[in-house]
Image (cartoon, rainbow, N blue to C red; front, side, top):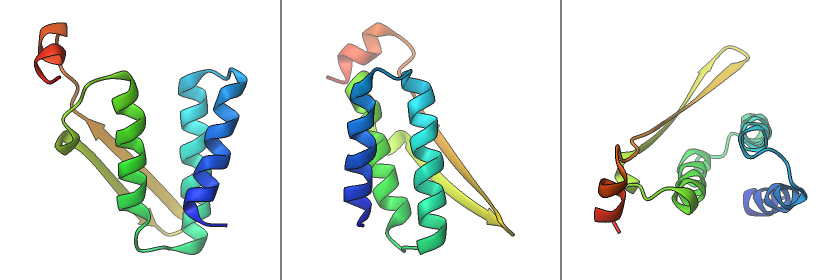
Amino acid sequence: MTLVDFLEKLLARSRKGHNTAKLAKERLQIIVSHERKQSSPDFLPLLQQELINVIAKYVKIDKDQVKVELERSGDCSILELNVTLPSSKMEMENTA
């Protein structure tokens, strides 16, 4: 199963009415777990692009202001996502 197939399967579950934040957390946990086993070199750039696309559906963001880092320490992986969001409605409209 490719990463794209895997993500499409996860996105299909979102149409069943789950809480958005909870669903996003579950998706990230599954993706990180899946990729930890496969260690694909394109994992982080693909994950970053997917996250940017999802966030951009809801908030206008500067795509250069999204940073994704994956740290591995022993059998533990930490996924860190930093997104700089517009501070006001006016700033959001100016980026459109």
